[in-house]
Length: 152
Figure 1 (cartoon, rainbow, N blue to C red):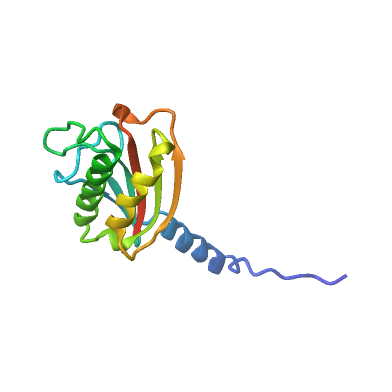
Figure 2: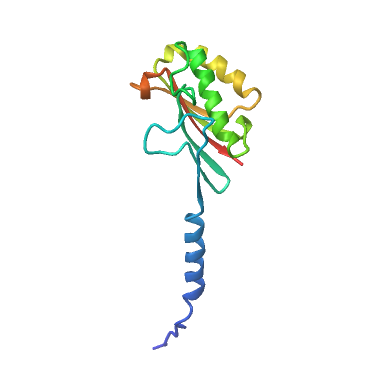
């Protein structure tokens, strides 16, 4: 019968790999907070940065100073949402061109065409991936909320 010799230290490279991967997975997380965008109205951050990714919480059409809803129509509300997104991104020296993915929540998909016109104007030639859904209810009963992911 052959004896198999296992070096008791052969696990060290695997242990080092484990700690390297673990430290990558627990990368630094930075919270973005700017007074140029509406303050969070719940227990969340305006955005989180980890690595090269910026995860922006959903923005609704609130004026950052008064915290009042801007506009009664989908076009005005969509424009305000983009102002708020731009303010959050600017806090990290980014612009709309850094966005790679958006999720749009709408109160009524019958307003999709009007929202889409403003959306196209705001993004210009940049066309991030997007999902759009009708939501049963959006905070403060607004017509639209947009969340996004940007890359540095």
